Image (cartoon, rainbow, N blue to C red; front, side, top):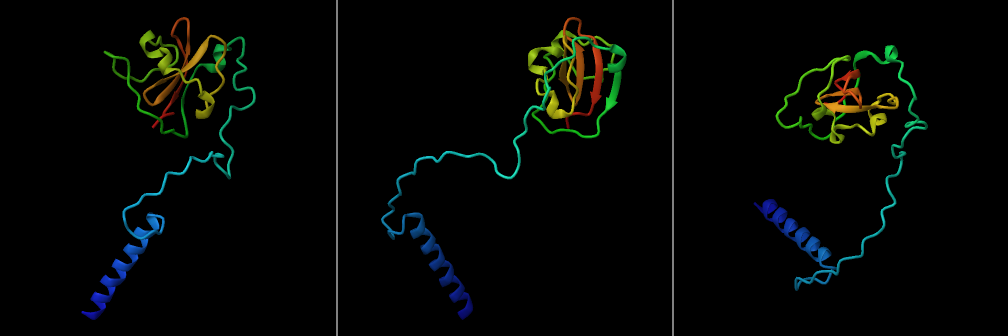
Length: 154
């Protein structure tokens, strides 16, 4: 019983000390310290911020279609924001050579930071777009799918 009372007294004493510390050590009265001005944030330490690799946007002028025509399963999936298909459409698994409807390659589906996901630099006239968990390299004139990377997004 005595040890229980001592533990309670200790907890009360510690709580009072914390309360005083939170009020600038003035001990009561409920006074609040004036908020301090925000300090500039120097940024993260210990690692380099991801940056575009050299040549990330040096797009080949011509697409050697034979080189690109593949359906790949990627080895790593990235967790990013949710994907919402165009209104009135549902997801499906696409393959190279198919024509992707225009609604699926609107600018909000473009992967302009494709290099972050390990995708190749698209040739001139092509863009990577997200379609559910997959990334599709499409011809921006026709919608033809030139290459597919399955499972890029988790």
